[in-house]
Image (cartoon, rainbow, N blue to C red):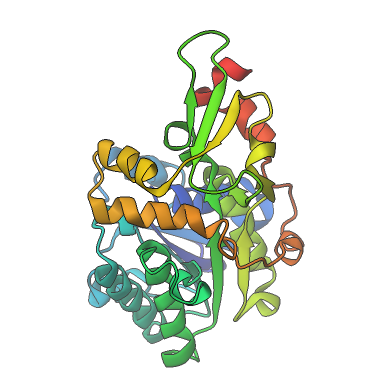
Length: 312
């Protein structure tokens, strides 16, 4: 690995956000000449890890539950992209501790640009009206910890929008009869604004922009979304939208195998779209100014997604 390149350590190297960061940095002649990529994964022997290594990524094993493990993984790194996965354990306190382990290790390792995959604190943003969106609030708690307890850690906060990839299956349901148009049923009005984000293709574009605008982005939140779409806009070419009540939505979620507390969490996550907004109404223009290539539109995602083949 060239000593002339700065090292960026990417947590979750084989996952959606981390994998996108690696793919984008490798595919850009400018960033691939400036950055040496260290992919951090729990199991460097997995086939997905070996594929990264074959592309020139330094793959190392790292455990976000251990600060010592993170210290070893961050050795010599100039930048770190960090993301945690609440849904793996459904444990808010554990995710907060994982984030603290990562941030503490980054500070102790002398990291010069820490990029934390954060989200807004829904409980605070809604004045306690939606207290159960734990996967948002846990990431926000880590952001607060960094801002208050680690003020000397140079940090940018990347806030991913609603994943386009989560919509097929979770939101949209094809009708059983031709022409297989889709219906959408959620516990919010159809005019609710939804900041959609193509995670696999676009996380890396935003992170590249953050790296290229370090001074401008330090201490700030970068909103990772293409556009605020209304549910009506999303459903062009589909059969229709049906607003449903709380109990119906919870019944669908528990029927799909989720524990009741997780179903309530997803219900409140949806209600956030109508109760103050996913990003609290903040605009996307400044975040878009950081990227040098267009973000994926919903229309483009539909055309390229196998899940929507019946609408092509």
